[in-house]
Image (cartoon, rainbow, N blue to C red; front, side, top):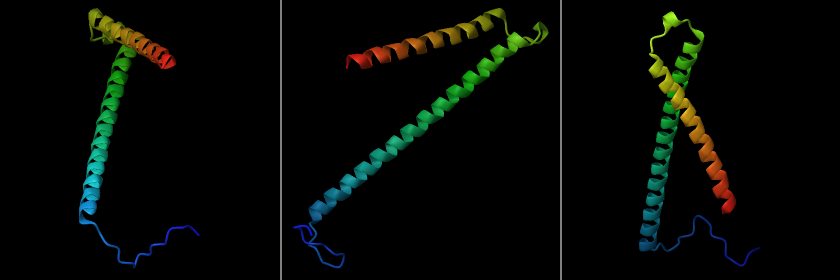
Length: 108
């Protein structure tokens, strides 16, 4: 139905060796790039999980100091203040980054 002749699998087509080699090199390059992207993605996911687990543990420690009696505390007041400052500054930083992202995306 189209103007082009149909090509069947059993037809012997001339193969341009140089074009075939270039195509193989391009496919290898694309596969290598895709593999590198997969590795980078896995590393990013691993880092995100490590951060989430660490923050969860630190948060649970801080909550335990709010709930448990004083006799079970093993951190000093200065260390507890450091944890509080860490969470407060992290929250402020995250809010500021989100605000800047929204402002910059509106300008574009």
